[in-house]
Image (tube, rainbow, N blue to C red; front, top):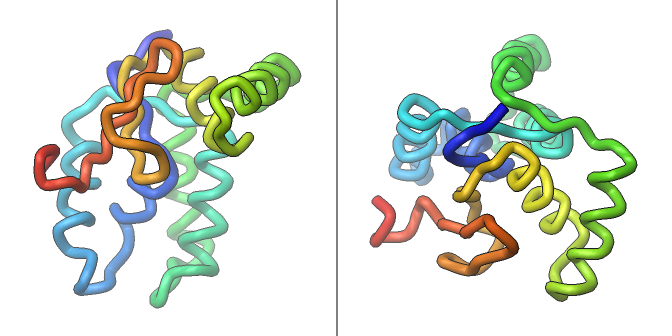
Length: 141
């Protein structure tokens, strides 16, 4: 199971955020979901659910969020297991990044993704075989 790109939580959240100030990011996030063969992970989908049901100015009702979760888990998907956990710990230390970011990178690599779309890391940075791209920068739009 291989994918072109891996989508981090913030990309997925923007796809459902109805805040008028987030229109450009919402459009870009939806374009990525439509256009790319992407993968996610248990961590990303869990963070997505919590964020969209509790942290948005206009949260999704749980049933709508659950339908998104159902769709996302049908895509190539990496569960959190002991190997991912241990790999992320080693990488977080080696790369001096937060564990959670290392876990996302490790999941992306497990799916063969060469690109990780996220706002959380340095745009253009290469971690192992995965390049970080901020899809919301002017150069990426």
